[in-house]
Structures are given as C-alpha cells and as structure tokens.
Image 1 (tube, rainbow, N blue to C red):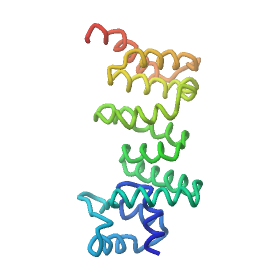
Image 2 (image 1 turned 30 degrees about the horizontal axis):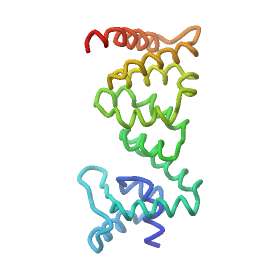
Image 3 (image 1 turned 60 degrees about the vertical axis):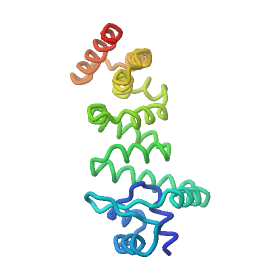
Length: 200
C-alpha cells in the first residue's frame, strides 16, 4: 500500500499533503508522509505552507517510470490533476512543469494565459520557454495571445529574432475586433522588439 501511495504521488515534486490526499484518495496522506520521513530516508519535509514533502530523487524517478509503464494514461491524468492543483494554489512553476511533463497542450495554454506575465516579472523564464517549446508554432499561430506571451518571453531572454517570429504568428490569427489589452500588449512588445538591438 505504501509503495502504491508513493507511486501515485511521485508525479509531483514537491508534493503538498492536500495534493497527496487528492491524488491517492487517502485522507491519511499527511500521516503516511510524516511516518515515512521519520522512519525512512525516502521522504523529506520542506518548509512552507501547506505542509510539503519531497521524495528522494532516485526513488521518485523510479516510481514515475514504473507508473508510466503500468499506465501512461493514468500517469498523464494524475500529472494534469496535480498541475491544476498547483495552479489553483498560485504555484505556476510547479503547475507548468507538470503540464509540460504530461504534454497536455490545452492545460499548458490555459496556464500560460493565467501566469505568463507574472512569471516574466518574477524571472521564471525557463519553465515558460519550455512550455512554449512544447506548444509549438502551430499553437501560437492559432492564438494571438499565446503568440504575444511567447514573444514577450523571448524578448526578456534577449532572443529578438524569436520574438519577431512570434509577433508575426500573432498577426496570422489577429481578430477583427481585438480586445484592448491585446492591442496594448502587441504595441508594447513591438516597440520593445524594435528598440532592443539599439539597447543592446
């Protein structure tokens, strides 16, 4: 039972107690994790709220691989559920990592729309770029908001050529009557992209 519990919760790193309960369906998830921390070296408690734990890295990798082998569909479902949980608790880095891991492009797009600006401001560019890469150009060509968020992320990384390409992607699906915030975002990114070589 303990092994199955750990296998199910291994999709998330770190793992919060309420999330462990949700994924495993066990109300006693906190007690199990607390016992494992004190009785073994498999689990370590982390500071912060909610109470959060981390499974030892090699064990976590083994458990994830075992879960994927037994049921890739179930592993994807659990990862997507964990991604939504972290997103609902304002932890976008963890949310994006999990959505990228299970290749859920719809969830990735949703999370990018919610958190990209916040993550750009906080400097969390790497998970953003990873998510944008997984989505691919076909996604940004079909959604001007995603294209602009991708352009802004590349711009903040100094990748001017990539930013210009994404600006072009935004134009391919630009709506006839765009919302004001989309127009403002496009104008700012376009201005910064033009100024960036001079600034550099």
